[in-house]
Length: 61
Image 1 (cartoon, rainbow, N blue to C red):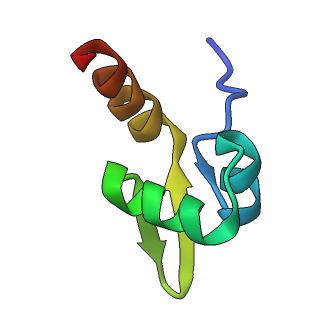
Image 2: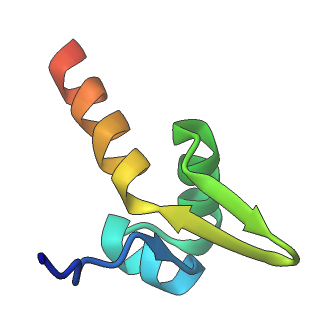
């Protein structure tokens, strides 16, 4: 059995560190990629979706 050690959902602080963006820009960027997930009052960002969408943006160039 393979263990999954990669984190998929991260909070805003981790999302900011992952993208290297400031708070407001990171929130807008996550929303535009469609990787924002709301669970109750928490807002998390799906890194798998973000990576796929960023790859698509890169391939479009």
